[in-house]
Length: 130
Ligand code: FES
Image (tube, rainbow, N blue to C red; front, top):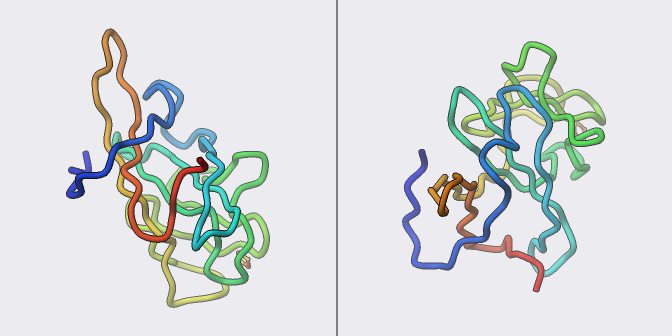
C-alpha cells in the first residue's frame, strides 16, 4: 500500500473489489493543469496504483474501453501506438516516447465500514472535478 504523505482530503475512487489483477481500469474525470482529463486506477500484484490517463508519447488516453493491461497482465499499454509501462511505477518500458513515465497519483486502500475502498489523495496539478 502506498502511504499518503499529504494532508489533503482523499477522494473515494471505487470499492477495492472493483480493481482486479490485470482487469479493467477504473476511470475518473479529473482536471490536470485546469484542463479536463481522466485518471485511471488499477491493481497490480495486490497493490492499487493510479495514473493520469495521458500517454507521455502524444498525450492520448492510454485505455481502450477501460482496458490498459497487456494480455499477460504484466504491463500497461497505450492503445494508440503501443507504448508499454510498468504498472507499479509508470515507467515506460517499450514503444515510442522512451524515456518517459506516466504521472503517478497517490493512492491507498482503507476500510470503510464493512468494505474496503480505493482512495486517491489529490495533489499537484491533478485535481478532482468540483
Ligand atoms: S500516444 Fe501512447 S504510444 Fe503514442
